[in-house]
Image 1: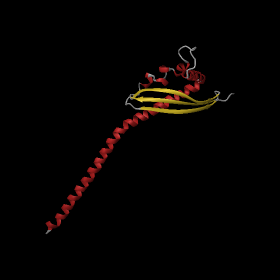
Image 2: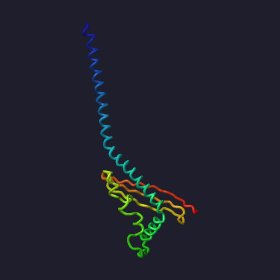
Image 3: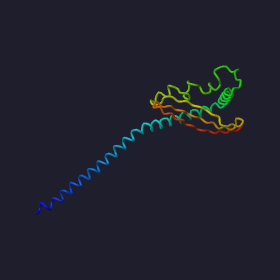
Image 4: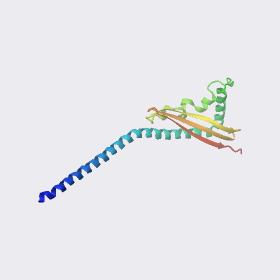
Length: 169
């Protein structure tokens, strides 16, 4: 009679163990799937974060250069704008004023190989200035755009606008 009483308990214990094992299997499978999805997105996020910080640094250098040499910026920018519009500016021999201001490949603003050596995923980058508005050289709004190309094939563009008002002393 005692053997009959223990049989349902043993059967219930087996059912509980099987259900517990199934729950653990489902939780383990969902954890593995979550980890697999996170691993594919993390390198992309790392590229984006690295490009963002890099672009912010380049933008700060560009702002500093504009603040330090505003006359060179205006001279070069307006000369380049006139040249692109087809106006005759042939009396200036190379190098052109805009190329002198940008510094081309000789400065960190235009793809210096020495600066990008520490960034293994960075392929190339460039900096572009746009003069959005100015009022007789007293009030400026300038847009600085940094384009960063990563070796992974992703291209990121970061823009910042700065406004400045000069007061005559």
